[in-house]
Length: 116
Image (cartoon, rainbow, N blue to C red):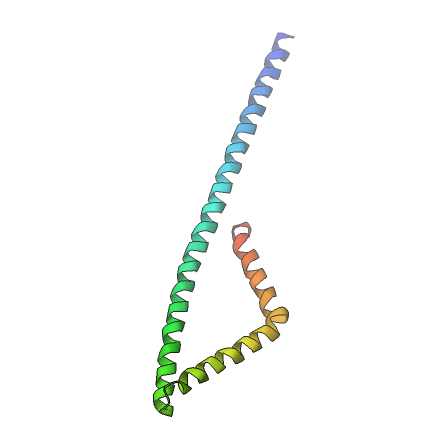
């Protein structure tokens, strides 16, 4: 009887220890996933900012170059604006069919990449 009570006590201790370890593991996994997500967002954000700056200065360079070629101070910038308008119209027409699904899949893959 006393031995059975001792076994039950050991079992209760093991179960409570197991629950504590699982709780700690869940916390550590959550912190790990959150820090990976934050680092990923930060680095992707920096890359995006640098790409936008390169694109902006490239656009200015192209606008000035075309203005010089056309010998018209605003003509080159109008051509660049027309190119961007055309690109925006094309992107708007294909975004539902191609772009959104690919972006969603990339985000899901990044979020669940360590489960493979």
